[in-house]
Amino acid sequence: MLKLKQLALAAGFVLMTGAPAFAQDAVQGKTIFDGNCAVCHSIDADVVGPALKDVHERRGDEWLHKFIKNSQELVQSGDADAVAVFEKFNKMPMPAFEGSLSDDDINHVVAYIKEASAAAPAVAEEPVATSTAEAAAPAAVQDVAFMDLPPIVHFIYGLVGLIILLIVIVLIMLFRVIVPMMGDSLKDEEFHSTFSGRVYALMSGDASVMTGKAKDEIHSTHDFDGIQEYDNDLPPWWKYMFYASILFAVGYMLHYHVFRTGALQLEEYETEMAQAALIAAQNVEDPNAVTDYEVLTDAAALESGKALYIQNCAACHGQAGEGTVGPNLTDEYWLHGGDVNDIFKTVKFGVPSKGMVPWQGKLTKDQMLEVSSYILSLQGSNPPNGKEAQGEKE
Image (tube, rainbow, N blue to C red):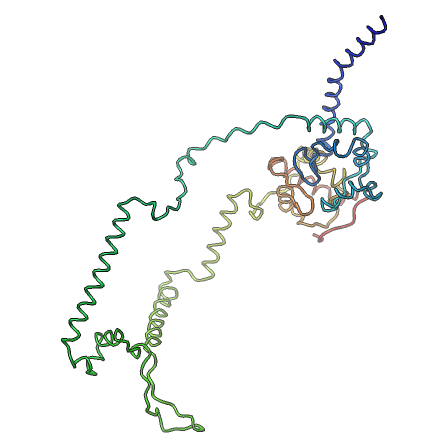
């Protein structure tokens, strides 16, 4: 009976202390995860690597231990799950943590993944308060169907249409009354040469007013192999367009080259480029925005950059910048430019197609500049096991 009581007390003690022990493992695991895994993994979303929510249920703890220690060894062994993950995520090899993480460390990481997977979904963010300027901005104009317009609008449209119809009817009636009154005078050549005569001829179906007349008169007495030239009229529509082009050319010359009141092509291009540069500079999220950052050289900034690098970049670029998954950062070759502004943009916007995650929103502008400056300070350090050169020499 005494043994049963002792056993019950022991079981109760285990039940009471088990949860805090697990929580302590998860706390340590979060610290390890943030320092080594958060660069490429998230619990809820795919980043460089897959989302880790409930991965322990899909794979098992033993498989996770093997994959974390040396993922490529597991891939090369033909493990179906490891190969599938490797293929799905652009064949980006995960750094091997065998030697840098102990079995206990990996247990802590797995405990954190389990706890984070079981955690309730994050509370939805509160809506951001609308600024006064945004509140004062007019709402976007919406298209309204014609039948949905107010009756007064329909009435006005109908009235305008009726007036136009009446004007057309009156003009037709006048034409039908006046034309018979003119009699044979409509056929006179003198009348045909007037503006009214040309309008009448066009309305009567005589297209020669616009196309000109074909004449059976030889233009000259010369003859070339039986080819003769007739003295036909040039189409009036063509002559009118030619006269209009002459007037346009004179106006163009005066506007652009005499009075210089208009901008020529080069000046327009330079003005538009200047405007585009201003717009790009105002948009901090534009990868093409021009920046003019200077390399930080003071010890405090470089030390801060080093700490940020070790925490966020070393997993893919090596502790000394020698390159592992990512390229070597200590040589003279660069894939996306070796100027501090180029490096800053690469850090900020990332290169998702190559597995480089964007750090905007995770690091501040000052932190990204510190990291970029620290990376440039690694030039020529020649760490052991440096990855082969990639990109162009600068």
